[in-house]
Length: 348
Image (cartoon, rainbow, N blue to C red; front, side, top):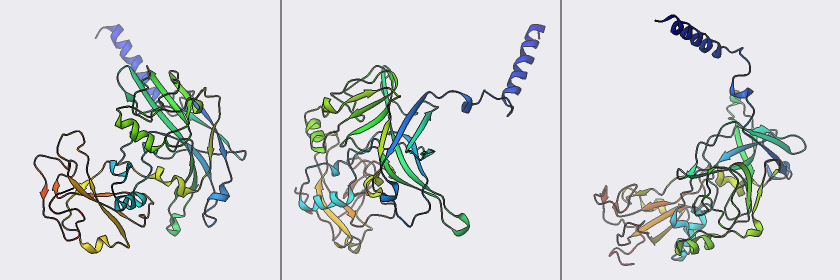
């Protein structure tokens, strides 16, 4: 090896060794300035919305980046019949709700004056768009960290009490990160009618739209419009306000996003669909763009929510696959059971 190459290799090895030392201050990510800082103000009285029997309060805030919503079309209006409306009432969460990316709540404590500053040290891991225009949105969550007692078998828990962006159907303020251009036709928490956010980080607000407006716009091949009067674009020196609300009003934000899952009705007993425990309906099923003739499905939802509080709907079809009810080679093809709520002859 030539002498100059040997010297370069030794220098590189020495530098690599130094970089791994714990006492080399100033090179770790915690020492780097944040990419952005979000100033938060929590509004409201935590004691008024939390369970008085809970452990001592530790109010914290955290950023949650948004994931792509996957609303169940069964939950979209209009309901086909009264039974379908009853299933929607107990089994559907907000179809326009914010869906978190589930990176965990790793926040900071709120000061006694209700303020906190969240530092953003990494770029969002989920950007939506094409190679020329990408966007990501985040909501500020306010939650109570309840420190458990492992010795007594009491686990730690986080209880959500507010979010700056909880639903497209409500006024919101969100952290935006834009890379490249901006596409207001993108169906990712759309803000059609609002001004474009600048490149990089910014705060954007919108007034929201109803589910009916969203469904009507989709029927015309469009996105719903926001009222420009409710739109804002702010720099990061503007405070993000998070109003505290009862946990029941925001608990859907704690639930995992999932696409509809289809299954065969055999193996389920009529007792499971006792009207005092479950709501069951027969509805048509969209063709999902396949061009197949529409079929019928049974949908069911428990009246009492599961312990996590997350609502869901079960979908049953007589012929199909678990992820595709219109698959060419079905995983099952079974006769209707005794509890089947749809016409057995396949008539609508």
